Image 1: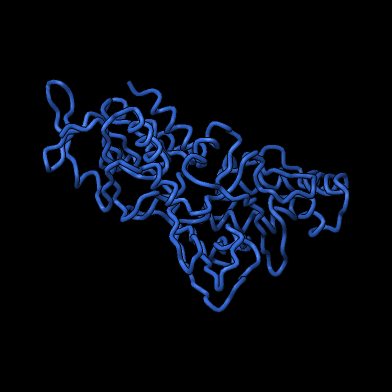
Image 2: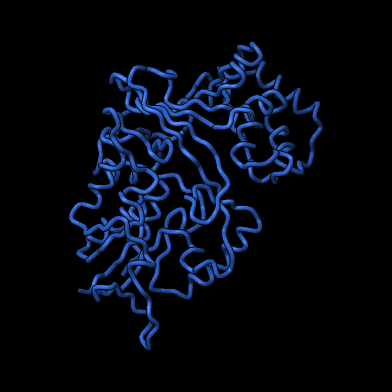
Length: 378
């Protein structure tokens, strides 16, 4: 059989693209190296609770087209992301807002908070930040930095803030209102049945094979008419949509692009109905090894007996680990540009998604990019 598309990866980019091609009457086969679909937004029911297996994913967008699109495949609840920061027994609201500043300094009015922050910034006298620490201090002052930025950031990146480049933190939003909504986007929520069910609906009627890697499934052969992609059964594919790691596709011939990884420690608590009172609590002191604890039932306002929590640990990435966050520093961006030149010479392959394009994507931006890519197909 000849397929129009072999889609490698069943995360949001792959699932949306595959759905759009099927709607256009194209033949599509989807493969995924994991044992399930939905990529990093995979959710699984545990004790009647939708557990985000690869970290919290809150859908948010201001793009009405994308919002209408995802609502074709799922009903969304009205969850509003309002994380809490824990620092040595003290609790602060995130993002940094008047509730945060009141807890930190006892100020009540916005001008009091502005004056406090401005005085700290002025006292530091930093005009040209040379590292992340100086950049953050010049944006929020010492108190907010020391309690809510420093330890959390050092855990995320695995190094001292003074060893990190300033550009990593271009801005730190300060809100002088009593509003704990983390996102400014107009539309926000989580699928009531979980993300996996949403992706499964996108892939309905499409052949999907899990536990299958691209290199183990297909081979590419150069010929007089270009590259032929064939699987072991003799099926051919006109085009490959590759959402895996760009450097891995090229067998790391130019070297490894760098990432940060994560490790998750999930605990079922059948005798505890409410562990922390909030879906997300960030632990901002360096001495606590995890960056946050997620209590999954609060994403859906759950009233089930028992609860499930996940501790999230940042980790160095090594080949074979799951890559989560691209390290878009000068070195890696230069290396990515060289890989992109190699990709341009493979017109039969469309590289998409977070790993294929080596950039951090919010979910709505992934969907938007996949829709644009589908629209561009002839």
